[in-house]
Length: 199
Image 1: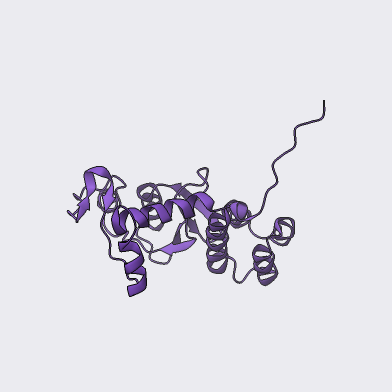
Image 2: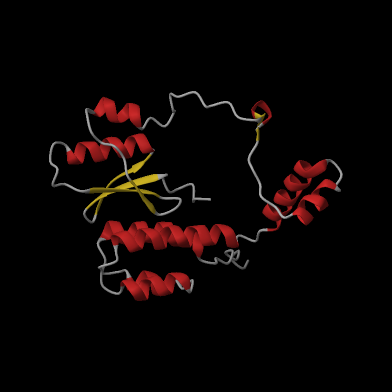
């Protein structure tokens, strides 16, 4: 899960962060920055994944707002399951022995799968969240900082979970890129809880 202090989307024009926020806000800022100038390039990133997002910025600001409205004006299509209860039906592919085992469980396959997922989520020690943060930072770095000095060393320190070295290596990078990398990567580093001061 993305750190709640990091907005869901960010837009960069060159090395400068021009907007962070909802998809609608970032799309409008990108539309405003590009205006009628096709030579201006704005890159938009989904911060949870670090991946670049391509948006249709053509037309007026109102057109862009309607296309990328976070509220979503379209009604969701009806799918199997019990949507009122929050249950969504999806397809799962398993081997016959897995289906046999699931069929023998009390409550059936769906109940057994839900219990397995809940147990796995509860037992997760934060490694999955740390991996997602690391992958988001790495994806952003590869796009925005791939040509910057010490990029490879910085990427290695990210994967080694060496926060101090990463921050030292990116010190010479443009401020907005450096700050964004540090924010995305923060959740990937093991942090020890702060000790209470001795009394």
